[in-house]
Image (cartoon, rainbow, N blue to C red; front, side, top):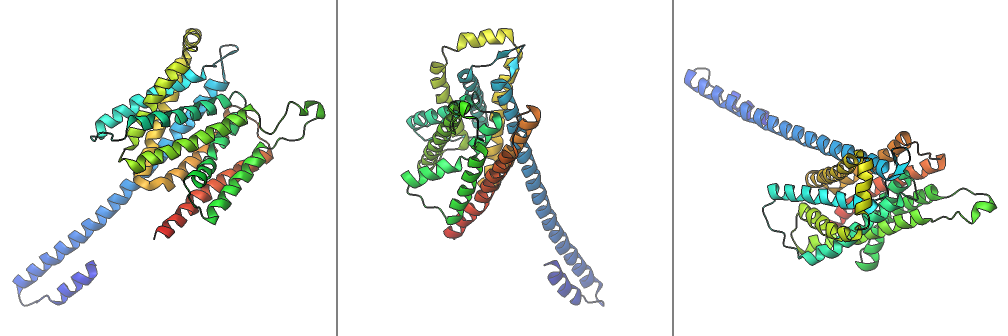
Length: 358
């Protein structure tokens, strides 16, 4: 654009007239300066976008990775010689309180509009939201952490099934193939090798931990469907959802964990360091959600899905290395299949939807 404008100006320059030449030089200099400023502006915008992406990626990766480490440390580790933390409901209550306070603070600072959605919708949505968290954390009493992370990674399956059954949604063939890849990976991971007949009665494909993970996935699907309904019906902000769902979950959990309060404080007196672990657990959860909202807002759900899928894979790897959770070659193959299916689904599924809209 600069060359096409500057060249005619040079041809129009009159050497016999110093006044005309000076005026033309000034005009040429002005045009080049404007074009350079435009290029610099575009470069600055790209640099800002790159910095935002790096911040969002590191925010999700670091906070949720540490969240996973703390979750396994609290629920499956030992405090003292052989004292274990068993107050899962109280742990989720602390997490919801911190999430609620964080969302309220951010909303008060950045959001000026009033939440138009009726509170009764949040009441019902909070039940499934709270139930999913309780089920996934109680599952850790029966399965190791890599199994829990992998189980929670297949959330698209119940979301798709509920969408087909109750919302009459239709999905592309690529979507079904990706989900089939995920299901195959889960089956390969969860398959139990043959055991002696004397132990066969105590071993089954679906134990209590696996059943709790399935329940958590179903409740996640219900939560997602209800959140979509709220978003479609009312112009709510992300922090409105975060605040109200955690607020109502706190009320339910206070009732649910009344029998754990006194034993929890007795445990804290014996092991004061657990308070820092619980606080850090809640803060990493809140900050991780915040960076997820930032990623979706600035780069869209596709980029966010790719980042979170990558993070979960490295969370499993970190659990194997840090906490010495053994995984067989077959389970690693299943893990790779699951995350490959999730990655392909997040990319090609959304592109097909976009093409259909065009």
